[in-house]
Amino acid sequence: MYARWKRAARLGDRRATESLPGRAKRLTKAAEDLDTLARAAGGRHYKTAEKVTARVGVIAARRRVVSCLRWHVEQDEDGVPTLTWCLDQEVLDAEAAVDGWYALIAPLTTEQATPAEVLIQYKGQGTVERRYAGFKGPLAVAPVFVQHNHRVAALIQVICLALLVFCLIERQVRQALGPEQTMAGLYPDNRRVRPTGRMILYHLGELTLRIGNVTDPPTVQITRGVQLHLLELLGIEVTRTRWPQT
Image (cartoon, rainbow, N blue to C red):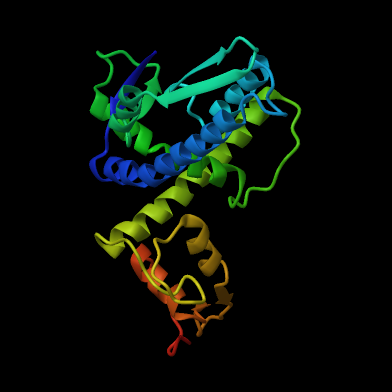
């Protein structure tokens, strides 16, 4: 297992920029607390060096300056403590230099994957997790209680096949939409979003079939324009109503 450091250009620069105000605020608060403690050292609440030392530890942990804080507590002949402190600029510069960087830990050797391949796999983690959510969520596969291992395996296989079809539907619609992969009509506010398998099946699940007869073939009743659009994107040929409601 090894850790590799990779910077994604835009994401890294953005994170580096966003961390600057937070660091400045944290250091300012730490300086204010330490200055207050230095003035209060030897007073009613901090009469001993032990109390001052304990308070410094609390401030360092709360303001997250343990690594860069340099401090010293001394006592005079009367046992009155005094506190001197400073922030190590070299440590602060080192922390600022790694802003926007993050470690990727993977059970892969350098022969198995390059840093770029590890980063690509990491960026695809969200898709994998979304498929796990689909596996346990929107798939309309009724739970069945089984007693034998081979039936458990068969049930899992059926669910995996349903997940495969679920993913292929989403993939087909997005590819048909072109590079942007967004469409309107999926939500009430008509904003443009990337269609998901869950949303596609939600809209297509409202389709109804009018049973015909010998002279009148069955007809799929399309009640909304988004349903017609999704069917066209999926390349499905169905018998349509003459005037679909939009």
